[in-house]
Picture 1 (cartoon, rainbow, N blue to C red):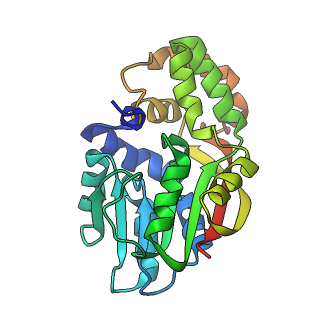
Picture 2 (picture 1 turned 30 degrees about the horizontal axis):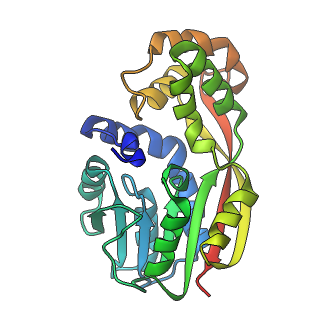
Length: 260
């Protein structure tokens, strides 16, 4: 089994992901990422590792009535959700390392919160560059630092084990902005720029946060949620408002570059 196969979700988890993760974390970042990509009407846009398609949907709002937006993901369950929500977008099941698109097929390529999961990141970036036209643009988002998520990973390791803790840390493994810029530069892109933004994950309660992070991802069934709730109650108090709502600050790096 390829390394990235470990990140697949089943149908129920994919629906849960769209209902809970997307509004809590990914929707706001998707808007920033699409803005950074500078999408305009009638451009051909590709959302790589699109998941349930939030970036593709945000881009489709900008390209006008002629929808020239495509999403590709390895996970059929995520794509099923994407197709249900926006059937007019072109959804493809496939691997970023070998995409079924001709050279110079797109004007802008996006990749949100996925580069860290690719087995060969440079190869993936090279493939993104291949499908971009001359003068095309790439916009990649990776997560930077997050004290709240770091604390949660440590708690998870204590409750469930090191493997589970490391899985939870995986989305933050490219938190060094210079490292990400070097990866993009190493794939042959030009005019590489990095902008770091501050955002947050927002949940109605600590219970919602813990259940979403466990049941909405590959950790489902591997963690005692009641034990996690008990362990996090005091340690994450600083991120909990008086009304019980949870807000965990997250840093993100948005890297943009062009093909030439």
